[in-house]
Length: 68
Ligand SMILES: [Zn+2]
Ligand SMILES: [Zn+2]
Image (cartoon, rainbow, N blue to C red; front, side):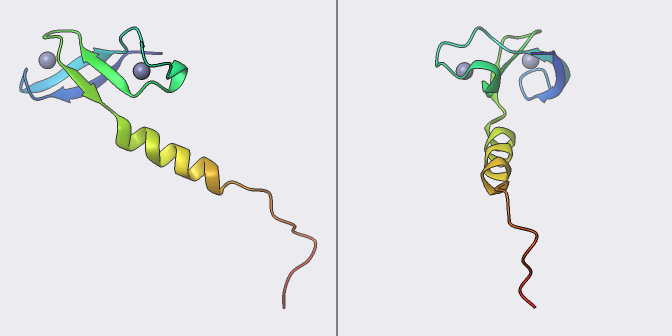
């Protein structure tokens, strides 16, 4: 997972965050990031949940039959 810049409350500014080694079996979807400066952990769960919900709605719909 690529590093990303987020606002860190502890550092009171934007810092570079990186994904820690995941111990909860999240894999590539692990919502945890750790500030590379102070070590504070943050969750990007809102983003992850929103993505999951969108994926759920992405069901194939029959397009050849339109109710008119
Ligand atoms: Zn995880
Ligand atoms: Zn920090």
